[in-house]
Image (cartoon, rainbow, N blue to C red; front, side, top):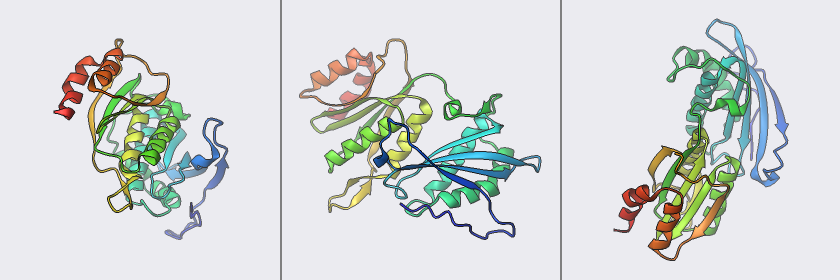
Length: 268
């Protein structure tokens, strides 16, 4: 898992930043990859340098998979931190399969001013000083995903469980015959990060046994968790022997209507 942090002479002044390897939280095993904090500066709107703290979580599948990114700065609002993070992830998608951390640091140093001058989202008044403060949408959200198939089921299941754990998501991975559903609950931004992982990482194998990305996932619905919806305490993998058994699972979570609208059509 290479990082390639050697300086690249793209302008006359050398690119300067400080990189520190972080110890992962106790809940995250060492085998889940590595975490690095990078302290750097980039030119802001007023021609003054803005200090940035960038935290990269590099999973074992990096660089075939996007890194997790946290952006902090006492000089930016919460919304601005979130926009910078989203732009970094968009840029990272163009660099998949090659070490990208250094390139991303260079890119944000060169593009921060433009991003702040042309934001695509509204601003906020709070300063961004922690990962938790990056949330734009308050409250608990829920998403139901449908997967067409899993060829390497055991590996696929382990990967889904790991992503859910890393992103603090709860819910169910549900199997009923050929139907495969993933029900996620958590912060909306964490769910968005999960969807990026699901779409960009080589999580399964094709008919020839070669690793491949998930190209047949569909989002059946997304909604803010309502009072009638059950709050899941953990992420579990469950298999159901019949459609009635699966339906009861949805009914006990307050999702009877959504089951009728979205899940039943999968068996017709």
